Length: 111
Image 1 (cartoon, rainbow, N blue to C red):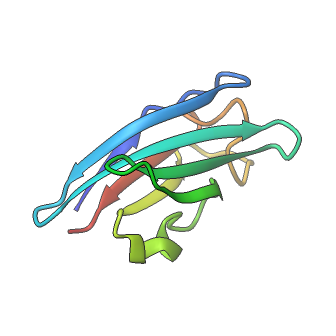
Image 2 (cartoon, rainbow, N blue to C red):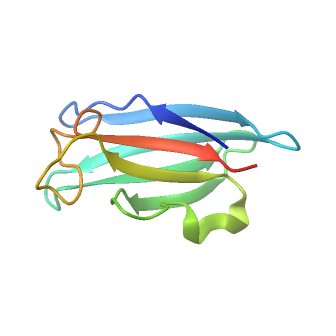
């Protein structure tokens, strides 16, 4: 089981895009992850696209702590993702200043 920290930052009004490839023994996962911060709702969301065909797999998935973000999408076979606090914090989820520092985004696979 291997997990990687996605190198996110909290730049205001930014849209961050990452191409993630994970070699999983029997398969390769190749996705594009797009992160956005919504100033009005005060939350981060993610969109996941299949890099091989450009198909949008997941749109506007909220980045919350305490759950496998991809748990409900296991039928897509793209792994698991978690938002994890790195230190004690009164915040329940990352805001526009804490993603990438107080909270990290981890993605990986259990195969």
